[in-house]
Amino acid sequence: MRYTISLKRNRDFVRLYRAGKSAASKELALYCRKNRTDENRLGITVSAKIGNAVTRNRVRRRIREAYRLNEHRFKPGFDIVVVARSRAVGCEFQALLSALLSLADRCGLLVP
Image 1 (spheres, one colour):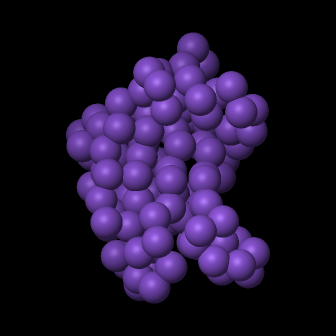
Image 2: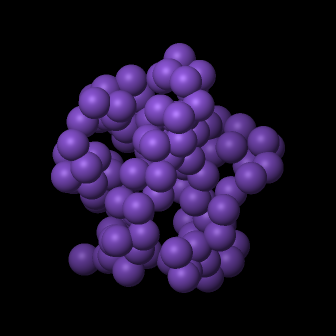
């Protein structure tokens, strides 16, 4: 991910949950908000309800890869949090990819 930094602080996540735009599908939920930089900051959340550590990390890696492959399509200057839902565990990568892109489009994150 060349143009993106990791979102790590809890207060940034909380700020997005409270004041950001959101969209949800069966597999993912996405929260976004403009930041004051020229870079995107990405955070990925996978709950312990999803499964054991191996399962959670696999879902996290797949979401990060789906974002990385389409990073050039995202507008710069946003904080983005992707929350995995329980359906994300069993879905195909292409379904996860299309869910991420459709949510980003609904939030207005994609370049026209």
